[in-house]
Length: 320
Image (tube, rainbow, N blue to C red; front, top):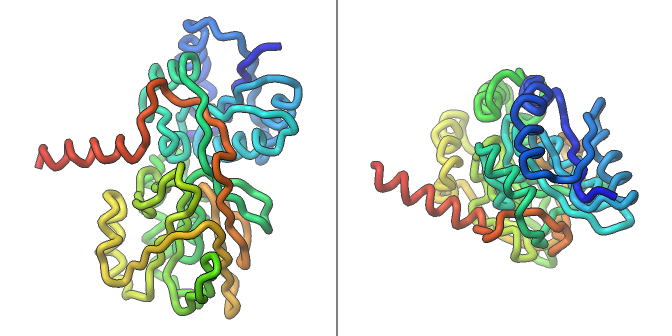
């Protein structure tokens, strides 16, 4: 039995991944002389089916070749299998937030393939949605954010993840009204009131590099939460760009807290929620941290994304 199985989404990144696979990725994988099999996905949820089946057959390392949607499906398949498996990724999608938060190289095919071939296996936290029965690596969110994600998914895949997100954000902003959310964090008192959005972070980022939950760590056994109280559209436009460097949390209308079990409801009107960019449906939902539940193939030596991000911010400060 071969150790590696690569799951390729040919329509990721505007349909460019199939060509990229044959022209660039496969030659790199072959250079490392890995013993592997691969399969193309053909429909939604297919990567979950493939990963779960292949792990149960005895393949150890499941590699997602695509974007965050593919990565989320692959890790769900790995976690649903009856045998232990390892999640890995060659990130070639429009966002690639999931592999990046685990420390898998971003924007460098050679480094990503080297990680697959020569990396180490390390356990990390994941989030879990009890009602939807879905795991997530990055961020679950609801309200304005989920509506933007819904529009982003329906947008052009020929644009970058950031461009799609920005266009969807502006369209959503024109008609958006805040939700009356009821939030229970662990055994703490209820948090109630009008909110523009609530983000529950296992990882820090989503939307192609937006650090919505800058305090999130994938090894601490808890979520970092960011919620935005009701503000004007103009103020939202001023605050939101700061999400790229995490400085939005300094605004007086932004609240942050942490917890391991989060229950959220929107009793007055239906509110969409998403995980890792995929719309799950409407609240209520309970989000639970699963500590060290997912084994990931990461570089050896491994550098946390928190450190990678810090170094990047330090470099930008020096430039300015």
